[in-house]
Image (cartoon, rainbow, N blue to C red; front, side, top):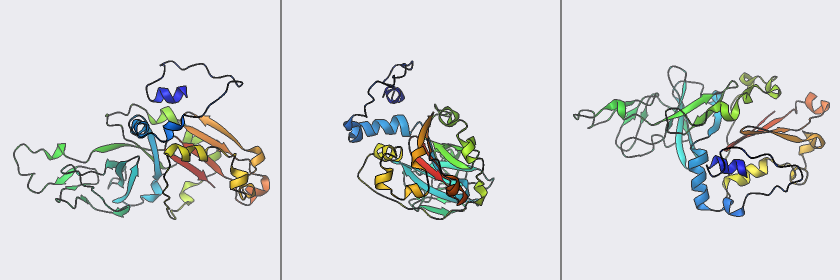
Length: 276
């Protein structure tokens, strides 16, 4: 719990000595899963400071392709510009804070707010502000969309950081250095993948409940009786690495021969991924 408190700035600056294997390790207090105040603190201290995994670049194949997201109540949009770069912006018009895009995905030559007609280029720069751009003292260069930091890793996955500072307080490498170069991904040809579909699930639970569930396989044999057909649970183990939890399910040679080799990883705080 000490390391989590340090994330909030509540713990000691120096890391405490690790617990011995005989010490009791307790779960987080139940109130941390239900408290509105705790969630707001997490939004400020975690979700607006940490790198968030969103998607893969294959979902933005063409200039003008964009995707809308909302993570922990922060709405933003990813877009591929005409130079081939992936940009991210807060999905908020600079005029009256109306959403710039209102659909989940699309392709646009320009972003046009449907409230008062302000429009922005794929680079976020203000292109048109009817009735304002002719006013003395109005500076279009200072009224573009608010940018969000973007990192595309070596495997093509797109990460964002909502830190408003010019340089994020947490560098991507601080939490995820070399995570895209793990040996388990050496045989994966990401260019062979194509986007198929998305699906949504809504529930009245805290985000940590989902993370807790994903990162323990104690429930696997009971709740997922089909798992042994794709992984050897007797060899199951996890390894923590900075901001990630790497799951190892020892697939048998027969399972691997049938294309059932899997690699699952949790990326704190918002994403998990299984590659097969």
